[in-house]
Image 1 (cartoon, rainbow, N blue to C red):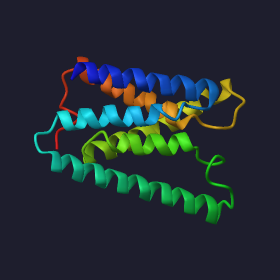
Image 2: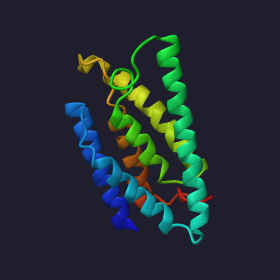
Image 3: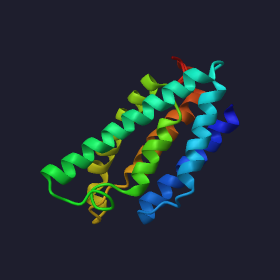
Length: 161
């Protein structure tokens, strides 16, 4: 279990580095993150159907969030959505994250990662002249810290239903 968590942290670090430095992430990292997170999710549960139900609900939530972002971007802001307001890597990261946790934990981590990304972007905004936000990278940092701390700090499990 610890090796899977460390592998997840390594992959998330790669996503952070690439997104922060280059604003592009190799596409194959997202399925790898999703597979490792899903493996952790399945490893913590005895009943696979509960995991499948949670994952489907998470993916439905992500789809709803992305649809809302699309409607606001296109309808209200009158801007292009994909690769202008929202990157393909961000979309892939959202779905990869949806594979990794029970729905309640996913909702808390997803919301926390978005808030963390917003605060971090505002804190580091003066250092970069680029107007884009490395959202997948910042969210990877948050998730990597959560997973890394779960290895060493005795807290309730991320996978408790």
